Length: 337
Image (cartoon, rainbow, N blue to C red; front, top):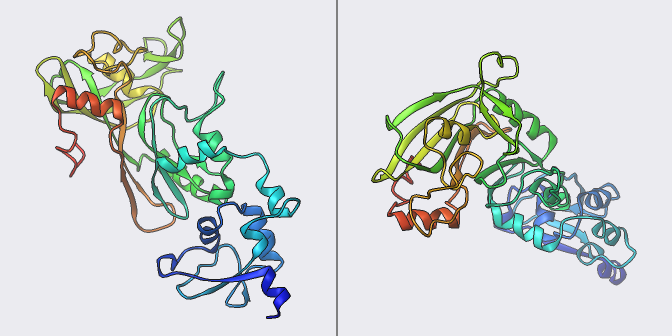
């Protein structure tokens, strides 16, 4: 290689820990500033090669492989195609760090996030900053536009599943439709449900009124618009007669289902202003925030013959309440309640 060429390109050896990575993911880790579109251009023009051979983004690298990379890709100069691509509208540094800090699990097809309290999953009236929008601005990081597979309420925390490309989103969507995803939520409720284990079956309809966006139990004559909903619950621990830590397993996935069902049996979720849980907190100093957490998700992998099994730790406000009430969140870590 002559001196002029060596000034324009560099050769990087794939490390042991990187063995088996897709080439596009290898680039995302090594060169996060490179967009997916610009990488494709480099590949099509032969500017990126592995062991001196032309390659595609989906090809996998092995330890010791020699990856030829234009130096312009490492630090795009002003006016270069890479600089223009990097300058395209995208997520801010703060938003990128927010998403990176949420990641519980990631592979080529799936991203599992630990959603914090108070951030919306999708946009709506008056909602400008939301997870779906931030992810859309991070296609350079993920190689495609990530797609939400399910939803959590703004104030619900915990496991949120995201597909990293369209094909994975379609497969995971079908899995959710067939109810093959096992979801476990943890909640703190007012009072102690009796019996300690049970099932709530109550069809729900959207309610209109001053309380805003909420659902209620369907009344006679509302069968057409009613949504069948089933929830299994189990008391994990209790605080005298004041409160209970419950494990909730929804069979269906209706809007506000868990919140409405717990109110229906007389044990609203602590901190839930829409469903009668915002008043008479079980102890002083408990934060008046919704105490509902998507604890665990078990779901078949969209492209492999294995399962994704991810658990999310309790958020700070729920950890504080557990500590205040003498509950031990590690007590049932093995089976997650």
